[in-house]
Length: 314
Image (cartoon, rainbow, N blue to C red):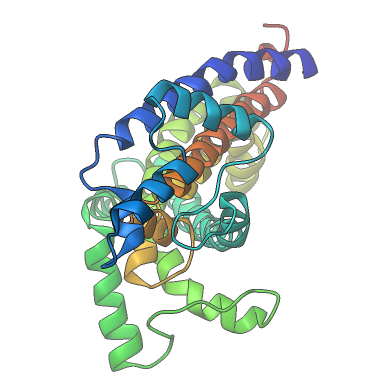
């Protein structure tokens, strides 16, 4: 297993380098000058030139890239132009927020999607199956921003059950933190639940037709035992793989939801950085997100080998 993970990490290194090149040079195409945004109304030419020299913006692009990637390999992602804080510090402040949101959304997706997929597969062709598929299609089709706004109007404005926006650190007040995160997690979780339901249904349909399931039924085992212990256990391989990949997507794809609910996570940080032409922050966030997504892919492959003994010798 360790040799397999080592090989995957070696394969991932060129991918990360290509992503870093793409991100660095593509963001240079963005309109606007970060120095002008930083200088504000006082655009004294001497000050502008000083800032460009300070942040090495007068260097050729390839020199800027190699300087940045060389520092990144040493754990230095640069300094934010706006806040003058290390980018790594900003990421360390915002990452726990997005991780909490991603974990809660994934729990909601699993609680809704996996049972719905099991029931849909077991009741294939019935009204239950049709209803589950209609709900899954709805979950995939409804935009997150619309669902978020509707939940704010109904749950917060009309009923007053949950706060409409904001964030409370989990360690400061766990209950209030969960209350502020519940609606955005539900918005993200419902879309993921639809995807998870479809994959669970597909995996269960294949397993329920297998010989060992028929043998288990022939032994007189209860349907609950057959479905849960024999069928679901063997269908978990693709389900666990999908869950792992969905978690990686959540870390990178919660931007809009965080903006709607004013959650100070990765999403808000990257949007503010783009508008402020804060190149170092954008580069650092995208690089860290890419590494996290690749790590989730490696974890998914490792779990697949753990759950499927036939893959361990490959």
